[in-house]
Image 1 (cartoon, helix red, strand yellow):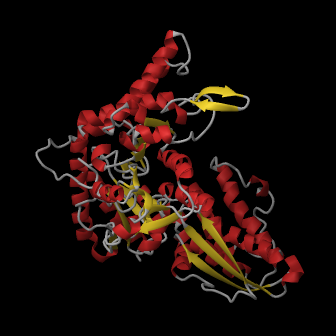
Image 2: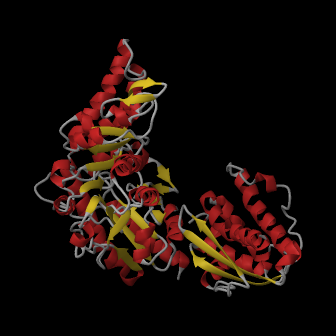
Image 3: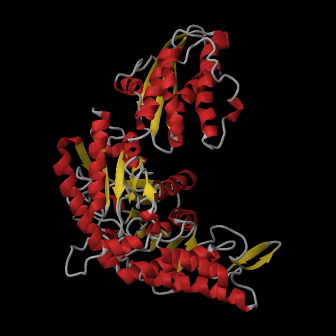
Length: 422
Length: 168
């Protein structure tokens, strides 16, 4: 399934929420005298026991620095990391492990594209196309390139309902070198039609970079179906550890790009007058990589794929439909939901304004009910300006959430309304 | 809702709903300084009109206006601040700012905070100089919620920024 298509609940076996919750010990911890109702997975997901176990086992049995050592332990560590690379390649439907570059997070992956591919290929006046619902991680590296290289940025706008406005797409892509676009808005939950956009971008001669931070954890990702040339995501949003991110790119692109960070591990030879970079993907991995985190990421992918990303997507779609039906029905005009009003082409992220209560204050009251939602601009200030707000409250769900969690959010909102009595 | 009443005292909600000295002043002769909390997007704008900027810390705050947007804590703190410093000298306002930030940082230390403002502790605590903390005392409940301390101090840091810009 390509991003852009939210698969309807069909003949998939529904998730057993209670069994899945049991895989996440943190969800059983008390919070503010209540159970923990974690609705902030768009910022960072929780981790199942299997991920911690994989990391512990790696440190207990296989840890040494990778590559260039003759002893068996280092060989095992290298194998653990490189098997993680193959795991990630198959997760995104890549054709070879060489296409996977490990970074610290998606932000670093996007910076790598801008600083390496962008700086080497873009000249003053060359065009990069972004949308107004991008995360700062897919904006600031391009703004930096605009400053340093005179690159022109063009912006795809939004419809009043918070979908991508495609009316000016061909003009925006005309003569463009790159379209860099989110796979799912981290504020609105909007899922743009990436495959269709990629087709148009390619027809216009532009490459396509997908910020899959929010989409990769929740849907099946197939880089070929998406038409991506670059694709970035973080491990910690898909049940993996913090400190590891991924850049997938076509091998010939990676081969044509200059190194990003310099240091050990990314070279073939170093002389006093220069250096020769290593082959891809190591060319882009300077210094000791996050080996244990890569092992943990592979374990997280195993966990998600054992359950099935199609089932996870269907489960979240059901929760999104439930929230979009029950919350407006209960709160009427006190609740303003930003973004598409129905669950079609939308992921499990709902941003809202409530009863004139500032999102910070709202989040503070919800916290006393153990309900974790995130207030703020969500690193999407251009989008906040489009929405005409300084901040929103954002609830987001994942495979371990259920309708009880949405109900708990609703009860906490009702309490906040009476507390502030505005 | 244990603890919330300590944070959201009635006086705070009153300043939030009916902010004092809200608005703008013509620049110049007034000065404008912008404060941001990049973590949450809260913004405070402080417009300052001193009687004679060349008097430095002896200058009188003839008028002050507050703009921006944000949560009840950042907005009410700035509102109370404006009411407290208006008509006083820059020196007195600086003194009050130290006292207010000390009230925040002392409690932060007790709560095991990072103590980044600890150089102020023991300086003005309890001694509010020539301006009484008054309503501002209501904000001391904020320190039980460490993540909100930056909301409470945003307006004050913007005020100090305004004094420094006036002095330039």
